[in-house]
Every structure is written in C-alpha cells, then in structure tokens.
Length: 198
Image (cartoon, rainbow, N blue to C red):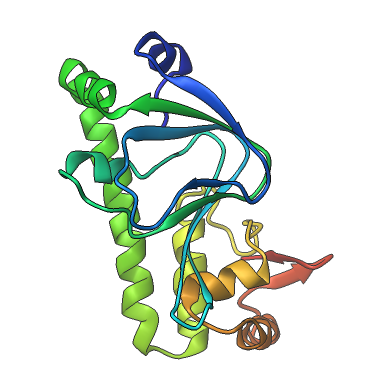
C-alpha cells in the first residue's frame, strides 16, 4: 500500500536513510510511526532461542510495514525490521497516520486490504507447516505469483533467494534447494541462469 509522498510530508513525515543491516525497529518495540519504503528493501524477521533466523517477510520499495500495530494500544512488535539494502524510508508519526485515515476513509480501506493480504499469506504459510516440503514451496510460489498479471507457466521470476524461500517456509536451505531441483524435474518450475521461473 502506498500513500503519496507529498501527503506524507505535508503531515509531518520525515525521510530517514538506513544502511545495509541497520535496524529500523526491534522485536518488542512499541511502534510510534507508519513506515513506507521510498527506496530499498526491508526484511521482517525474528530468531529462535537457538539463534536461527526466521524470515517473516521481505518488504519492497513502495510498500509499507508495521502499520497494523498502530491500531493497537501499546502492542509490541513481534518482529525486527532490518534494512536488506540501503534504504530511504518515510516515517509518519502514529497520530498523523490515524488522522489521515479519519480524513480519507478510502485510505482505511486500502490499509485493510494490505493487512488482509498479509494475514492471508501468513495463513497460507501456516497451513502448509504440516505439509510436505514441496507443498510449502508451492504455496509460497503460488502466493507470490498471484499478485502478477501474467499467470502463464514460468512467466514469474521469483524475487527471493533460496535462503529467503527457506526462511519463509521454515525449511532448511538444503531441503529447499533439493525440493527446487525436484520441482524443476517435475516441470513445475524452470531455472535459467540460477533464477527460478514459476
């Protein structure tokens, strides 16, 4: 979901630059801002007790993140937000963000749509948790491709690394690589110059 940058700035948003691996907020923080990426890419993650990273989502340029927490009083973030690349991010104070929604009800509908997509994705991944490895990967790929206008086989270049796919599905990277090769043999996907097409 994108709010026009001019509108954000007119309501007091500031642009903050982050370097690769800079923390934007931490798991356990109470968010005080709406975040929208102008340039770059952000990952949302957390860690198991033994230090294994669990990737929750990758957020691309033009997208927002963490906004659902702004509707809850003193809710703590369940994830870290970390810059994957150099980033420019618009930060709008919570009160200004909520004021925008009151003033522009259609914006609230757009935010509901964005939050619903996120919940749908988490449910798809959660549902696949008890399934075989290939089903988890297919669920992830189906979800990613569903946002594309072209639904022809092999028309979608997967924008994730194998490690990111493993983290999103809860698989180890070795299993992910093995399943991708198996899926290629079954003609479910193609690999061209190390890029996956689904």
